[in-house]
Image 1 (cartoon, rainbow, N blue to C red):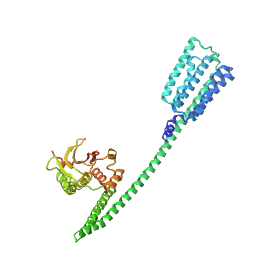
Image 2: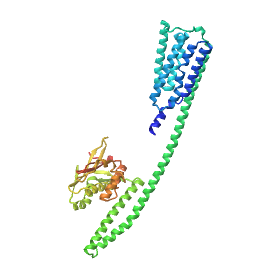
Image 3: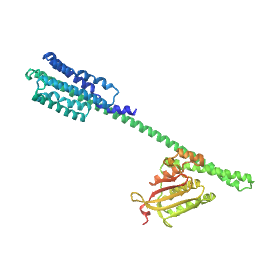
Image 4: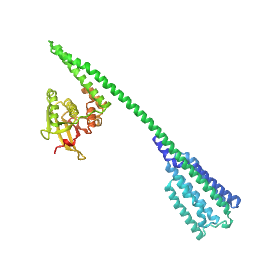
Length: 442
């Protein structure tokens, strides 16, 4: 389909071939009849008529399945044969080079209209060469004239040139008008298609918004009974239970916490998709926030025998921003690091640095010594409902939306987020946040 479209587009200069060929053939036949039948010069008449079959051969050439380069080359060869016979005919007519030029002036115009500006320039050189050949023949008399200039019907010739020029001008004008109509139709089609695509996009966005709102409502409704289940499980745990019953209650709590985590993830993601989060701009200490997040996840890391370490440029790093959103991002990244790391350590760092454009940024990093991430999965890591997320959910559980939520939050705060990872060695997740002027430290 693409190649056909390209051929159709590139073939626009050839769509008036038939009209130009008709004008050319009509002029050749008329001149051949004039000299061969009216003026009694059969040799000149046959010479003028001899290339008519070649010119007529261009008609089927237009429908041939040839490349545009082949069509252009064949058209040049036909024109060369035609101008060669015309040159010999002009020598037999006894015209001087000054008079012969009026017979050849059409050729560059003809070539320019049919094939292009550069082809017209080439034919200007060919016509100049043919005129030079006429001049050389006038000097050396290689071809013996069959007529003298006074034997030519000048009025008929001038009238013929006028008719041919007018016909050729009409063809050029029709081609120009045809191009304008074609362009106008294409523009109308493109405008109509763009309107259809815009309507389809609006429909898709509206459908996506409705689906997101439904997920948000569903997640919200699920949290209420889940919280009730968790509360009753905790109450039941405080009663006298056998060891087997205690184990069942523990499993209920684990399953409930897992379901609540998934519901919270879906709810957070749905809210971010449905509408932009409102950010707060309050002063907080980035180092203190980092230590609080690490303290929240230390018990979970301790159960796996992992070390959680922190690094910072100093004991304090006061900044201005939405501490709640930054905390949410850090919790997601650190929880993932603990989940996918079986032994070793996880390091959380915080520092101020300069961005590529020179603006100050706050950078957080979460580095682990876990399983790492395959290279082909990295481009899809922050996308929701990607194949990478599906594989992670099947293997490790969860909603698969944690990193997508982090990406949305960082985008809302006009920051950047990324990851460096080596399979089998670990990963380093990082994100940058722009610092407001009052938060910039010397």
